[in-house]
Amino acid sequence: MSDSKSVKKLRVDKILSHLGISTRSESKKLVKQGRVLVDGVAIKDSGLQVNPEIAKIEVDGEAVHYREFIYLLLNKPQGVVSATEDKWDDTVIDLLEAQYIAFEPFPVGRLDKDTEGLLLLTNDGQLAHELLSPRKHVPKTYEASVLGAVDEADGVAFRNGVTLDDGYETMPAELEIIRQFEQEGEIHSEIRLTIMEGKFHQVKRMFEAVGKKVVYLKRISMGPLQLDPELALGDYRELYPEELEALRNR
Image (cartoon, rainbow, N blue to C red):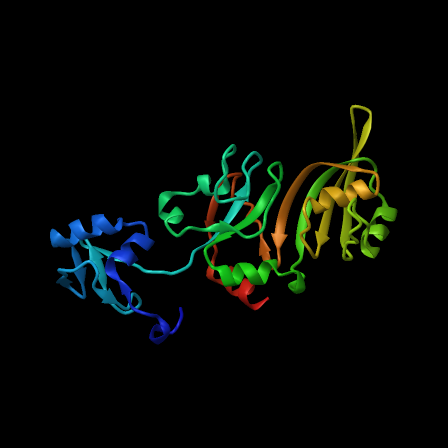
């Protein structure tokens, strides 16, 4: 927890709104009805300013636990887009409960609409910037099913960096071939690939550069953060304290 001395005072109605407990106007009604207590005393003004990490706030007898940021680990399913809003498709925000939407989280980076796996959602802009900064080279690992026989020559090409369709040369990447199998007369390869950047459709374009096609893609890690195998597609949970600490100290 941050030093309470560094936390600025906030209006009670803003705290309740931030936590998704009530809107500003609803807070006024709650206060008028004597249902909001601060340090055991019913307040008369919803605009009262308090230090949320020191003051004991209660609504209808239930303690209000303030926090500024949330960090959610989502197992993103196919068919939803990594955005906060979209005119045509469901977004990852649509998968969340109202109590989390109230914090106005956003996805840290993007996964393609047809890509599954690990996606971090937060309202902590500073941490998001650290994870997405090209200068930080945060590793991201994917598992994929590829149409074609992926071989060691592809591994060498990826370690040396391949040139994408727009002329961009990728940073060195690590390729692991898990297995190969035949399906309907065609060879498929299951692979694991770790890249150090996050260009648009990068994994798919890297395989296109060596004459192969990705038919299924799933992200399993980003930096020290690993996809939780207990999370079904579309499910999410808050980061454990040790996961958040690892992200901050990577």
